[in-house]
Picture (cartoon, rainbow, N blue to C red):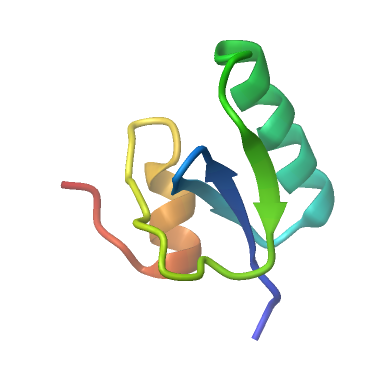
Length: 69
């Protein structure tokens, strides 16, 4: 099983990937879109809600087997 990296956006999980370099690039993308948000890479989702968006739906499905609503 591959290690997953979760992107924390303020108080929820907004993305996931299995590559640490990609995780850092995603954080930079989110920061560019919303400089006032607080973003960081986590090694587990904890008890935070995982939100599916058009931007992350393919990764969510690939890594977490979650369907976009």
